[in-house]
Structures are given as structure tokens and as C-alpha cells.
Amino acid sequence: MLSINKDETFAFAITADNKVIGSIGVFRQGNIHRQTAELGYYVAEEYWGKGIMTEAVKQICGYVFDKSDIIRIYAEPFAYNIASCRVLEKAGFQYEGTLRGNAVKNGKVIDMKMYSLLKTESLIISATI
Image 1 (cartoon, rainbow, N blue to C red):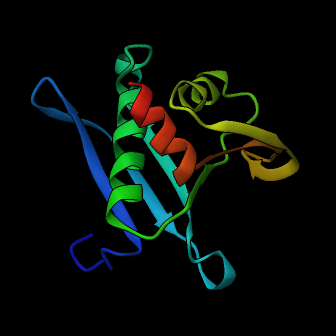
Image 2 (tube, rainbow, N blue to C red):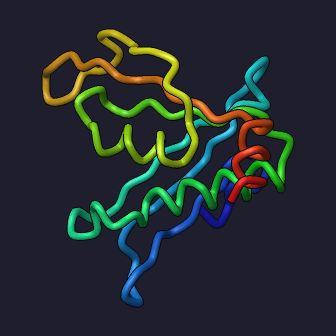
């Protein structure tokens, strides 16, 4: 992480109780998608349902939109991961559709959902808070 290009990868530890409990990152895409970035995150199970991830998603998106030329951040949670989808919805992301048969995990073909947040939407959300 120390050697990353700070204009392409925005990554942070999530902390609580004076320890690292997860991570979150936004990763710039390439070519015609260079102003688009993918969001990924993880938090330890004992911290689920406490609003920590929703707040982390809001903070990193605000940071990326403020500090870069990124105009769109997207995430692709597994369709069965309702909690992760809810995090994105509470953070202002819009559901765009289901990506059918988009991944293989543990030998199973899995659908994923596509969510996105545009910089212009983020500004509106920030103004209403």
C-alpha cells in the first residue's frame, strides 16, 4: 500500500475500540473509465449492524469526490448480501440492476448487484445533511 499511486487507489483502515476492524478502498478504473472507480469494503462480523460501514462509505466517497476528478463510484455486492446492499442504499447509492452469473465463489455461479453514486448526487446528499 505504501507504493500505490495515490491518484488511483484510495484505501483506509476502519477502526473502532482502538483496533483495526476492517478496510475500505476506492480503485480508479482505466481508459475510457478513468473517471470511474470501484468501491470495496470489509468489516469484522462483530461490528455488523452498527452503522460503521455506512459511515465509512459516506466518508470515503466524499473524500474521493473532493480530492480527485472521479465522477462515478460503483460497487458490485453479491446479490444475496442484503446487508451490503443496504449499506450502499443508506449511503446514497442507486441500484442499477443485477449482473446475472457475474461471479463464481466456492464453485457456485453468483449474481451480483450494481450500485453507483455520482459526484453530482454526492453533492446533493452532502448539502442535505
